[in-house]
Amino acid sequence: MRTIFLHLHPQKVNASALRINRTFGLGGMAALLIAVQLLTGILLRFYYIQNPASAYDSILFLKNNVLFGQFVRNIHYWSGVFLLMIAFLHFLRVFFTGAFRGSRRVNWWFGLVLLLLIVFANFTGYLLPWDQLAYWAITVSTNIIGYLPLAGDALRTAIIGGRELNGSTLQNFFNFHTAVLPLLMVVLVIYHFWRVRKSGGIMLPGTPDNSEMVPVMPYLVFREFIAALVLLAVLFATSALFNAPLLEKANPVYSMNPTKAPWYFAGVQELLMHFHPFFAAFVIPLLVMLFLICIPLIKIDDTQEGHWFISERGRQTAKSTAVFAIAVTLAGIFFNAWVMNFEIMLPGVPAWISNGIFPAVILLVLMAAFFYFHLNRKMLTKAELVQAAFVFIMMAFIVLTVVGVFFRGKDMELVWPWNV
Amino acid sequence: MKSPQQHPEPPTPVITRRDFFGLAWKGLGILAAVEVLGMIISFIFSGKNKNSAPPKQLLEAGPVDSFAKNSVCAFMGGRFYLARQQDGGFIALSLRCTHLGCSINWEENKKRFICPCHSSAFDISGEVLNPPASRALDYYPVLIEKGVVKVDIGTLKERKTTGKDQFTYA
Image 1 (cartoon, one colour):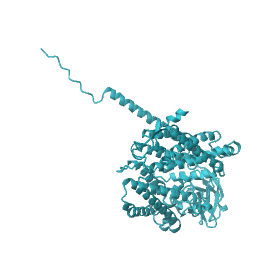
Image 2: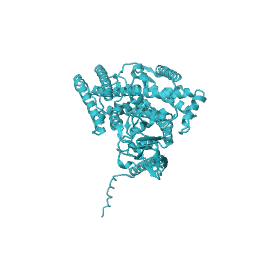
Image 3: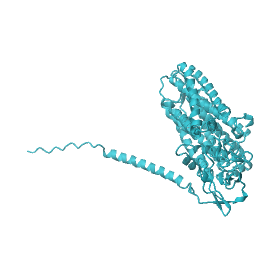
Image 4: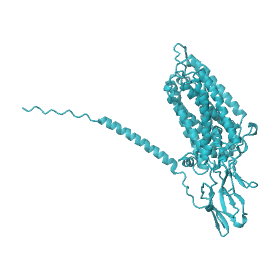
């Protein structure tokens, strides 16, 4: 047992790599949560029945008749939520410490794939209880897929196995959730860790050749053990206090009001309130995805790798860009909801112009102004500029998600969180 | 004396036998991979969507006279609203909002369908009153035989906007 853990590590690590604010241990935490998901998922499979007639009742049985049934389900639910959040934070950490260039480039791409797989795993799991929440969230989300150009409708039909959600959908999702995705994730996680070691361990600033090397046992392994215990304690406490949601059994003729996509798609759904579906569900996500894929390919001249936010100037720029992104996103949401809606204002114009190109141009003009009057005057390096763009996208995404989850009530009107 | 014939140096082949077999094996490997992939894909998709063109499924809604003009009657089992227009024309509107597929509700006092998800609104003919929906509601063909309204719930029809030919008259 001891040797297994030691084999995952080098014999010695740089003492400065142990400082918690180098990584905050996020990658390791994500791996631990995947292990928790595998274990609790296998347990849940002993009771879950994957057909629309029995799925919901099998969850009720689990809740009411199985010792620790509710608790295991809660752990699986919260661990899924934590996993997505921690994987996202890990992704931010890797970006902001610049650990994605050179030999780490491949791992950045595999990391993106893993993040997507985690999203899909959450998404496919969301349908399985077959309650009203699951049914309508997946209905809305899969209909968004239908707006993709050319193959959208065919893809949607293939995913849900018909025109609307049915037994095939549940079987497809169940198979992806419990076989395809976990298998892929286990293989990729192992590869992901292996590549970190190939690159010489975690990213450290500069080349600290004179720094002290310490044995991983006990210095690193013991810290990991403590981090694991704390994380599990928080997870179990959350699971003991808050039940995973379960509404009434799915009813295909009665939509929930409001019907919301799963929380990690709430940002996309919020975007759908303001942009034509072709832009909200296709153009914008595609551009963001391409940007993330291309980040490690952008040639930069400075070698300030491993420093948080590149430099002090980078840190300042990241802050001001974050404030700008929050302001622009919130202003856009309020303006579109309360002051003017281009699609209603310009009834003769096709929706993809009035509700797509029009707001996109306004947004681009604002971003160009910010660049010209603020960023451009700071004489930023290329890396710092890329970082500013990244900060803008991530902050806008976070604001959209928060608004979508906490500030959208009945009829998807803007309300205070306590009225949702 | 004839000098022994000099064997000409055999031309170096462009591709050696070893190279040839190496390439052949690689090609076979790729072919096998493609075959397996094709098998997996056809395995997954061939069994699904067999009923993409389902047969006519007629659902009897009731006699023509039982539906008042400018009124809407919900048939939740058939997943449609039978809407009779002011001019007496019938249309069977799908429950599904054309925006993201939520179930729409009929608001009698405002004479409109409203979607709870993103507040798209449609009038009694299924035409869009309020975005984000961009298409009129889908509908099922209505037949009137011997004064009885029947709806073919096997055939869902999509449309961009409302047209005269979509309504059925007694």
